[in-house]
Length: 556
Image (cartoon, rainbow, N blue to C red; front, side, top):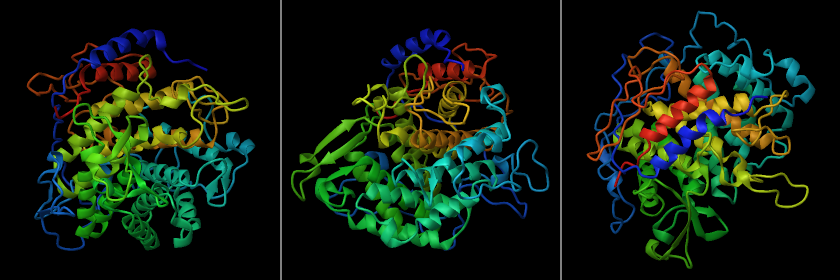
C-alpha cells in the first residue's frame, strides 16, 4: 500500500506552518459568485432550498431578555422583508443525475441498497470495482466517488443490527445517516434511500428518541432533517419537532443561557449541544417559516459567541460550567479550547442555513473563520492531514488499541460534513482543497482489501484501530467530498471553466489593510505551485499554499 508523500511535502508544509503562526488577523473577504439563472425545467428541485409556503416579514431577532446584549458579530442580522432562497438548482450541481440520459459506469435509479446485514465475505464480491481504489480513483470524476461510497457503505452494513450498528454508540447511527442522506443529495441518486428510511423508521417514537443526553437526541433530529430533504416523510418532521421541544425545555439562564448537555447535570453546557440546537432551529425555520425558530436560533448563537468563540484566533471552547443555578456567565468557568474537531463543525451546519434565511454574508464569514482555524490547529504539520488529538495516544491498557477510544473516533467526519455544507452556501477554494486532500490520503493510505477504513487518515492502515466507528468517520468524509465536488465540477454559482479538481488555485493573501488577493479559480497560484502528476501530491500542494496564504481570522 502506498505511503503518504512525506518527503515531498515536509519542507513546504513545515515552512507553511511556521509562517502561519505569524499571520495577521486581517479580514479575508470571500468573492461573491455571479448569479446563475434558475432552472425552469418541470423536474427541477432546488438544492438545499425549501419553498416559502407563507408570507414572511423581515426583522431582527428579539433577545430573550432585555438585559441581554447583542454580540457585534450578529448585530442587525435580520430576516429580509421579501425573503428569497439563494441556493442554486439541483440540476446545475448534480451532473451525475440528468433525467433521460444514461449515467455511465454507475447505477443511480437502478441500484439501491436493501436494509439488512451483509456478510463480510460478500462485500468484496458485491462491489463492482477492483481493489485498490488508488488504481482508479479520480477526484475529477464523481462516478469514482460514488463507487467508493458504494463500497464503503456495503462494508458498513456488515455491522448492521436492527436499526443500529454493533460496536457503535446510539448517537453515532444518525451521524452515519447524515452521510447517507448527503451522499444521495450530492450525487443525485437514490442508492441509500432504503437504508435512510429503515434507520429513521426503526428509531422513531418519543419514548425511544428522547434521551438524557441532549446532544445525542439532537443528532437524530439532524439526520431526520436531511432524510426529509431527500425523501419527504411528514412523520420525520414530527420526530424533529418532538426533539426540538424537548431540547428547549432545558434552556435556562445559568451561565447566561444555553441548553444543558445532560439533563441530570444542570451545571454543564457545551458547544456541541448548543451547536446542534442552533442548527436544528435554523433548518426548521427554513422548513416552516416559524419565526420562533429564528429567534431561538439567534439567541443561541448570540449566547455562544459571548463565551465560546475567540474572535482573535477563531478557536472554539468546549464547555462552560457553573457552581450553582443561575450563576452569571462572567462567573462561570469555561474549559477546553480547541480540544475536539467536531466543536468547530457544530455551528457550521446552522450558519449555512442561517445564511439561506437571511442572505447576510457575515454569517458565512463567521463560519469561514471557524473552519480556517480548525484547519490550522488540527492539521498534521508534515502531511496536512486532519488529526484528532487523541489519535497519537498510546494504548490506555494492555489489550486496548492505540489512539482514540470512544466517541472522538468519529469527530473528524462531523467537521467534514459541516465544512461541506458551509461550502455549498459559498464555494471556498481553501475548504474545497482541504476536504479533497483528506479523501485522497484515505484512498491511497488508509483502506484494506475489505473496504474498511482506519483511524489514521494519513496512514498507515492499522487493523487494531479500524472498525465501524472509523468507517462512519470516513463515510462522512466521502459524503463531504461528494458534496463539494458535485458543486465544483458542475461549476454551479461560478461561471468559470472547470479544469482539474486538484489544480493549484489562487488563494487570497492577507494584507495589513484586510484586502485580499483574487480567488478566481482560473487564475494561477501566486505561490508558484504547478500542477502535479500525482493526485495526492497535487492536493497536498494546494493545502500547503492554502496554509501559506489563506488562513486568517476575520476579526481582530
